Length: 377
Image (cartoon, rainbow, N blue to C red; front, top):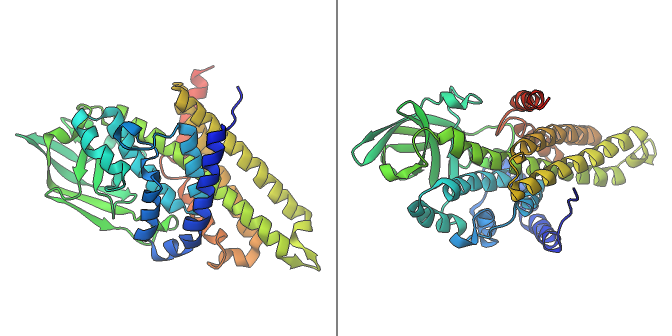
């Protein structure tokens, strides 16, 4: 199998990189410090149409192929993990609607999401529920023409600014997916501050206290919330996070190379130190390996290969571990400077760790990848 970028994909890659260098990277440190992304930065992302990257042209989106989406998330991740997370969760909701929603839901929500008029967020995790998603405690009870939701969600990325939430709740004891408008009666949010990394992801807790939504806001059918809707959404999320990890690691490499060129110790440039060269070599090779895993996953997803799900698991597992190792080495190369906010590798190091937890921890990946391997023997 030969995987290479088309001329159009190479052109888009250059476009994405230029946008990140000029509009994202210069403000990433301030985003982290303020724990928010300024409206003007989000508006620039919207103006480029990137919030519609995963939405088909039928509904006003760009309808990018999966490999191009991966390249976009790599470049955005190189500039700011928090803005990459915006693309991820918005895409998770949009793709769930486009794949599983009714015609009315698609025609109402998707054009607005493609234009960036509304932002989507994904509500699965709860105070007592993380990896064990099937044990959600939020409930949805049908009464007449409405569902009444009660429960609490936690760690909802972009929950502070989202307009529509994809909520997984138990209906008749079965996990079911719903669309909840932020203005629904009984719905409220609370910002979560002080996170270790991806601080500008504007994470929030969600509260549903007899939250009233139209019964037509159910996505799919009762009982398909995890097996169909959440599964496909999380698959997309893992793919974009894996690609974002490659971008984050690439940023670490670029910063380390620049630092080694100008920093001198013992009368010689740091780049001449063989142990430093070893770390740079491992960075280069591991980043390339992770990128190829992501491209393979994107290629398989675009082709509709059912094995793409496991390839995404492989890519997210390797890329997130790789990003942590690369970020750690980048800090080590910078020495004491690497522990200071004045140098971006300090932020990269904190951001990298988040990626080993979100959309499936490293340990959950190890269990599933090994289980699949045993099945194939």
